[in-house]
Length: 115
Image 1 (tube, rainbow, N blue to C red):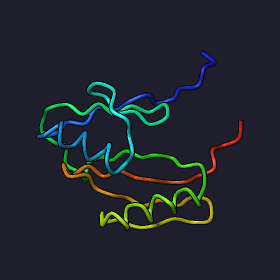
Image 2 (spheres, one colour):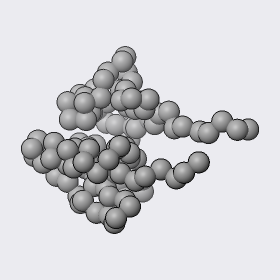
Image 3 (cartoon, one colour):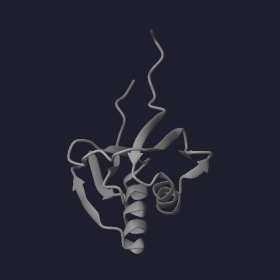
Image 4 (tube, rainbow, N blue to C red):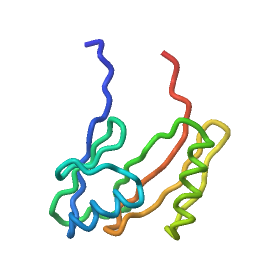
């Protein structure tokens, strides 16, 4: 097998899936396509269910540069959304926000490995 894997989608359980889908569209600028939310090649499916405890997991979006990361940071601050961070080092920088159902979302920049 030579083809590299690229994560396509995640499914997030939510008490109020419609409300959470709207939050993602309004604040993360995802595009709704039926019950799925799209951004680039990534898809989030928000399904009816009990939310997962946020201390047990999170998911993240990799950004193309530290400048893009800082633009998103400013975006959330202007919306009044609480931001945890930024944190990092010379090679890696990130921050987190929490959605209304308690899911932690990481936004980060890191150069991909060569090859």
